[in-house]
Image 1 (cartoon, rainbow, N blue to C red):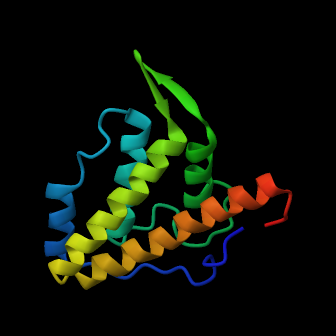
Image 2 (cartoon, rainbow, N blue to C red; image 1 turned 120 degrees about the vertical axis):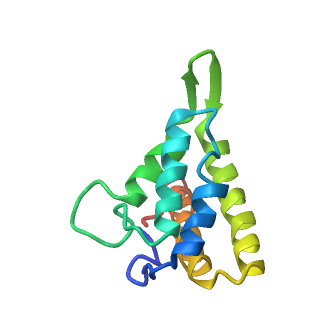
Length: 137
């Protein structure tokens, strides 16, 4: 499915960088519980916690979780309607902004883990476009 799958890695993140994530990013996407849960998973990955991000033999992993989230379409949550495809894009945008912020702070370990995640998100999008084009992934 993804070109970056075999090159995926997480590096250890110092505590001060983890604290930055805990105090700055944990409350994003709270308006939709499912999206918030996925965002918290991404923030754990940014901090170097596996959360099924690294290649494994299990069927349920980071890629599957994100692919299923992205492709579920319109979801009613309480009295609100959410478009999972758009929210997936918002998450990409948020990661990109976070990457810029951590690079300014010289939090290079966080930056490396965020870049790895962003590559996987791009792979998920390419996989979806290949499937819809009738090409094999």
